[in-house]
Length: 278
Image 1: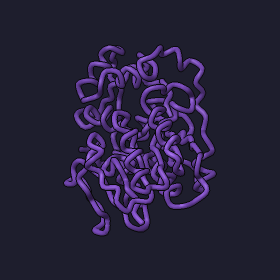
Image 2 (image 1 turned 30 degrees about the horizontal axis):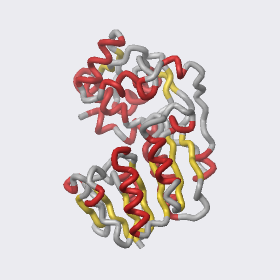
Image 3 (image 1 turned 90 degrees about the vertical axis):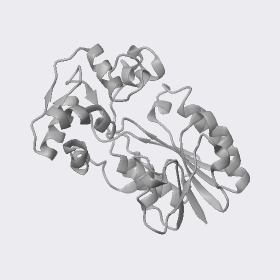
């Protein structure tokens, strides 16, 4: 039987495709980006067009969250005979911050009547490539208004590890796994780790929050997301004080599932040297 992976050329999806055993059908809007082994079936399709997704023969589905068409995609998958759906969701659902993006997709999957498992990661380490990469490559600086602000980024490979496991083995139906990443770091700590990986001393630009917001938007981040990332607004545009009581905890789910600790941010930086050197 076939496992279908949506978002197959994304940061997590591409690792899921490479790690799965058996027949894998990789769905992407741009097959030219699909650098996969020859036995992977690559199909041009788009979550915005559920009719384009070939569910024939598919038993398991890795679902990248796309709220506008999620219900239609899930309905089509179930009618075609999919019996297991693993959803790439968000830790914001666990903490009650997400009401309109990942949560409705989880609800659609849960109501489908098939086996489901939700993966709920926190902050993606890979976001640093888009946020910090341009200025690091240009002059070795970082645009961030609060270098001592805390974060808890997770390596995308840790998320993929769990996705592969729950797609391929039984015993995970009806569960939601929180994937927090390793212990918290300051932005300075993360800059130190990236600098050590690329052999360069990195410095923070002295910028205001509004200047940092303008920069984030200039490198392609939507304003609402940029405001959240910089702490100007809370999740989904809410009050940033909503996070005042948030505690950076290390969820045990990853280690319990894999028998290994989370990869460190320093490990992530070494894995992405090329992204910061240009």
